[in-house]
Length: 457
Image 1: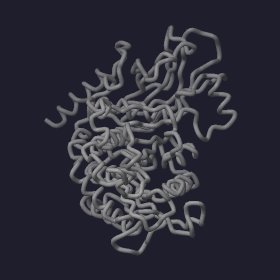
Image 2: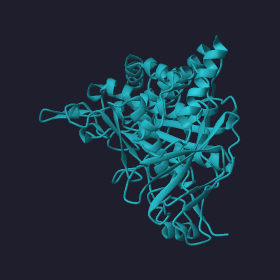
Image 3: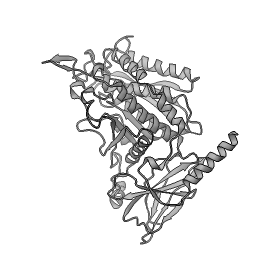
Image 4: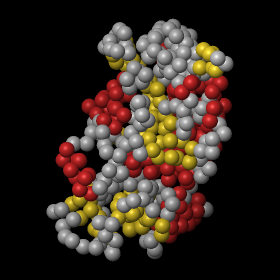
């Protein structure tokens, strides 16, 4: 009976993927829901997230310069608690997670009065068939009040960024109950408020060790500020995605300018993937892509990854309450200041957590994006010939060509073309459209889109 069901399911998938017609799609319509991912989303608990935020707030301050050996107050107590939470989750899944600390000495500087040890805490869930393909999801567990170097003031950091840290811990708990083709790294970094120090160390270590990081998410200020609970766009999260890559060389810039690829960086393709995934699994909760690297006068832990060539995006609530960020806890003229738990909406944090979970699981279950995608430019023609290298996955069904008008922000059309490495789109000129290629497995999981470069030879 099981074999019969499997065969019927496989036939249904192939029928759905056959290139019978070119159909427009709105993102979600291009895929079908995976019941295993639905189960993950149902398991996300706002209660667990709220308890995590409360515990992090209870450490009084998590300033990177604060005590590292006080068991109840300071950055060291928070570090050890996060490590213990990851270890508890690992024990529950029979040590499926490798829990570790990544420490380094930071020299004195503008926001670091004296040399300190900064520690990132991580839990790694190894992939089953492609463990070297890696996805990173992060938050920063340090906090600050008005003075980022003040090691003693109360800095509860409920929204910035206990919300993100508790979300990452919850992701590890939920996602550790299933297995994925690729590796997922859950990490809480420190030193963010001192200049993205922990994330920069992680990213540089990854670069030196040539880690194959296909995507990085950072969750920073996802607490759903209660002051904006009645706003019409409440059921949404901003995903910041840069266009022109931070590490772009001059030859790469010349190539980008020649094809108009300013809106098709790897970060933008990642953001589009997240948006499509959220539309599929959480149609009542929107992903609003912001075509910027980050907000004005601010920066997050995705930036060191972008600067080293990794695709990375930032998740942040749609409206920020600046009276409850980077403020000393106090009350003035009847107004409360300070980043306290009272101004965090844990149900909102749970929704953003679900967007992360759905996107990470979809990425780690799908094939990798096709490599060396090219648009052939050897001659003038009104057709568009695309080529790419074959993927290595054993469950690959084939590839999909996607395209859109040059003024469209998202992919609007798709065509499954089979398990080939070349396809010509007849009567669709590369001069008039942007094209991309993505891989599809036998269960219908789709990779992010690979944006082709010109091939003139």
